[in-house]
Image (cartoon, rainbow, N blue to C red; front, side):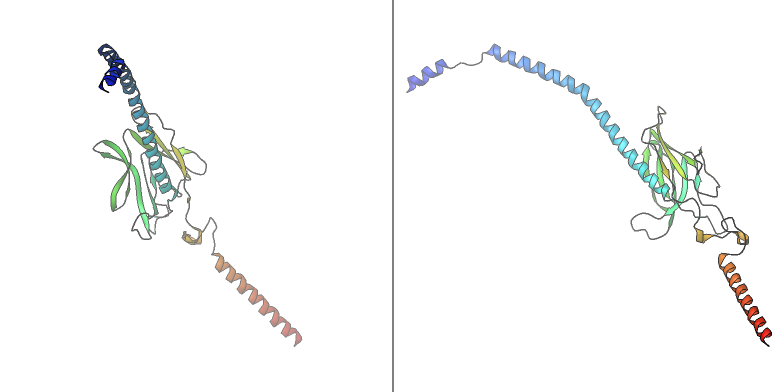
Length: 242
């Protein structure tokens, strides 16, 4: 039995030391080539992934700002004021909208969206008057600018002391370093531009550009006139029969 095992081992073949060294050298060359390719490809992959993530974050921020601006309400600062509380500039906008958020009851919020300074530079935040901490929307190097247009679709960089809210607001995001405008910039419509019909409080009874008494008073006057005419006709008929 031992003799047969010895004969079998003599017939077995194996790698020599030179063949092993050559195989290790070839494996090292292959791994070195793969490492060079990975070193060149991985940074580009990371930059592309970061660019996609930034675009998604900017898109979410624009959607939130657009929803806020679309819900702007025609609310005056006080009873004596006839203009809505809306102040828009190129880098910030202040408006009134229905209160939104957890544990928030029915009511209105004064909202400001605009730039402010931070440790990392300029940032765009959403803040509410006297409520909570500002919410970060955009960070450098990206900057957000606003433009406003009425029904005539003529764009302007500011909207101050107007009798109506703007019809549309353009949100433009640009790279501060290269001044390149991003393709995700958008335009949002404002659902309300004028006060409700039932809230007319113009002096001298002037509502919707028409002067005179309200419709209810005109209707009552017409009814009284018809009643007086009928009464006069009845009296005339009785006098004729007599």
